[in-house]
Image (cartoon, rainbow, N blue to C red; front, side, top):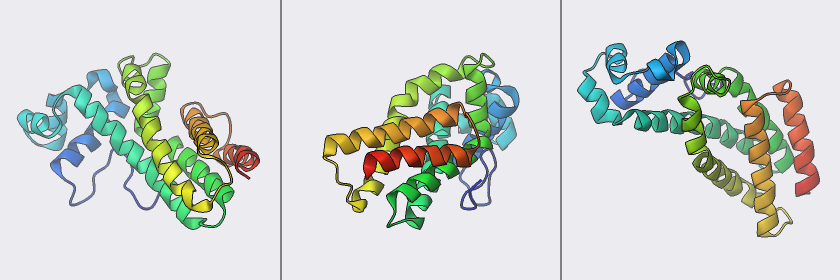
Length: 198
């Protein structure tokens, strides 16, 4: 995991009640499955009333949105760091971003719960993932597009958008269904990006 963020499903001192509820939800989802997560169980784990959980989160679908958004923020944070480390080499930035995302995915309990849901372990999570898939792509593409802009890639806007979409979708595909070690997959993604972007 990145040194800049706590592991998913854990709380650090100074976190808000909302953050503690989301942390607990991630932990419970990975331990007992999304279908077994209730506001009452969350209240017990966090040590607050059930009404407090509702006040902080709202409905269970709202809880799912908060969990997904928080994990997306974690992944995008490591992407930002990768681009910061390679301000003059876009392909190396993409290689490092891909590798760190894939490495973080290996240890992510919520992601493991979602992936197991796609294989029938917890059927409630799959619709949640597909419902939010388009918005996740939009957010991820917006961040990557913003980070690519300073590199001055010699492609017109539609081609650059297509290339960005391709990279994001390939990385997400490997997050959901890895086909090999993170470093090797990142090398492959960087090779593709180099052929398209240079």
